Each structure stands twice: as C-alpha cells, then as structure tokens.
Length: 99
Image (tube, rainbow, N blue to C red; front, side, top):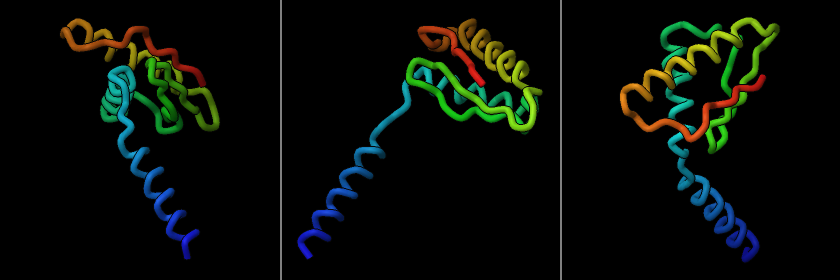
C-alpha cells in the first residue's frame, strides 16, 4: 500500500514538472511559422515538422519522398524575414532544418 502511494506521488510530480516546461521564443517562432505555412497550403502533407530545439533548430520528416522539403525551408525562412522586418523577436540564429 505504501509503495502504491509513493508511486502515485512520484508520477504526479513528474507529470507536474512536465506541465511547467515552456518553449523558448525561438521554438515558438519556428512552430508558428510552420503552422502558418501549413495553413497557407505551402507545405505538402508528406512533410511534417517533428522537433524544434530550444535554439530554433528544427527537424522534419518527408514521407515517401523528399518532395516538399525545399518548400518547407523556403516558407519558414520567408516567415522569419517577415517577422524580423516587423520588429518582432527573432531567434538568435536561423533555424537549421534537417530531414
């Protein structure tokens, strides 16, 4: 019984710690640019952003072919150019997209 209580408390603490982790501004900018590009239909459905590191480097996958990879990189770069010209916060380094 005591083991169960300790396990429940431990799981609760781990879940609570995970819930408080927030993205960096660089991560938010890349995810925002990706969502905008997807909404505009500029990225094919076979290309998915899978991870953004805290410094803004991003990784994506392209299922069945590399088609769409360049469109993803181009669109996100354009979104960063627009955000920097609008005096919005920009990442410290340009995102490095890798398949």
